[in-house]
Length: 320
Image (tube, rainbow, N blue to C red; front, side, top):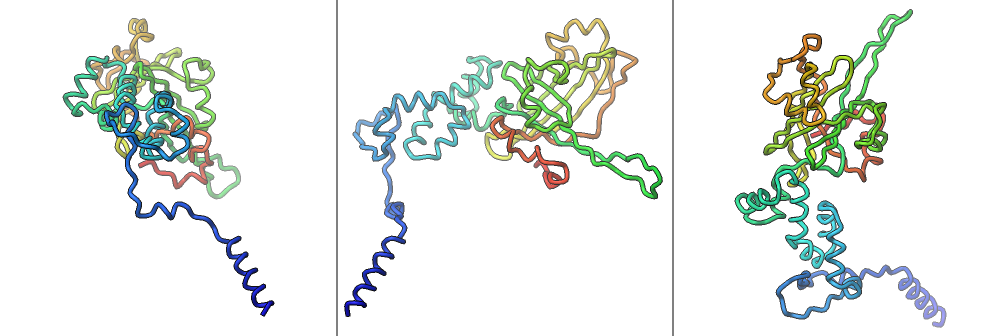
């Protein structure tokens, strides 16, 4: 009798020791009441059970959100109801839109948001095409190169992989680099302070709806103009993470037009035909190879991107 009672008590103690507490099960079927966000007109006093909300005033929470990027705000909105309603404040999205479309000016941006997006800055941020400036657009291209055969029956071949890198700025300038280096190596010097040895070239671009026109100058003994036409799209609403390369044309330019290269090379070649060149030594060539789509990689993901993998492990990667 004593042995059975002792064994039952030990079993019960082990059961309580091994039992995992699951407090979130108590929330099943419970409908939570939304917490009014900062600046709300609601006069009802609601006690927020979250410790961070009891310790952090709404004014300070608003200032913290004001320092975040729009994409960080989107992720923060998934934390809780209060953060979601606070981030819905149009002040955050108005500031983001005015910084993104800086070239349009505030008056034009206010006109567009009222006429096309029902006065919603957040809707304008999600639906209006825009080039992202918080990372790099990368195009991965491969081709087969025949090797040198010596005392062999079959010729060896090599799979060569190279990348096109583009970084856009809100001021209308962009940086371009064509290299076989991986993205984690290139991202460190994709800025205007890059040395000439890094082969980073700058140019100008324009964005009309989802069409991108860009041009830059390759310096050298025979200066060459690179003209790029792109189409902007996204895999989800507001992503803007793909660029389809429509055309890539190189042509010559004469010495009299080189005086304006630092101002606006895109304005110099505006109106040129695809087969037009102003230097007989540099014919106009429309490139038909190496036109893979550009994939956007944010700066915080350049170290972990699959584009850093070797060619044999990256063959499955197909930008869509």
